[in-house]
Image (cartoon, rainbow, N blue to C red; front, side, top):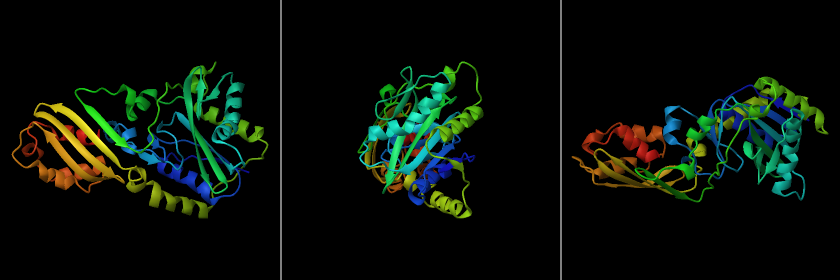
Length: 338
């Protein structure tokens, strides 16, 4: 039985490891890992609908799609991720699987005097506050269950990086993104460290968790590093899939995106139809003034990826004040991205 404690903080690589362990290994695995600041979206989600694109762009946050379902989460160094990979128990439903794999984590927290529980489909809570979200992926007869453990994560960054739908203001800006993707359901979150009787550095917490899991489980977990062949396979998967726009954004289901805003130069509304992350059609409406036809901007953005980098590149060739008087380029870009 294999135990992996990863030191890399690269979210692209770490998510590639998850797929490799599920699809290319055969033995049970327990893994602990952390990411530098990043947003991780579920496999079936519409990426742009889950993130605060302006905040993500300003803070250069990686956005990575994982192999498993569930909602979007924010990772930073104050968050610990844990993974179990094993043969899938026959006849077990999803609820039973979440209960089975999260049980040792709850038992470990109990040794620290923290009473936590599994509630709903996949959340771990302390006093009604969420500190862990969990997700499952299945490949043939293998199952991967991984989850977050908010230890001393930046709760303010979580709130700003993810789009909190029920708290969005309507006027003067209004965004509607309609599609077949599955939206996240935000809960009040907390950090485990808030409930400790004495301070405990995250590195010590992580090590104690490792010792507890590997000793308590009825399997003898041994630390087995990656082989050179495994590292090469993971790097290839990372480069060809997890670092690509096509996977992280283009896997999003088709959606209609409508956003309105009021600027010094007038009101504006943008309507986009996006499929596989590509803007298939765009219409810009409003009572703004211009010296050049809006259709030229629309034509340039048709076929462009719905991302800040791609749209900025397309717009760099335009003198936008000629098309949209008294509407700042950054404000127009924000309107297109939400």
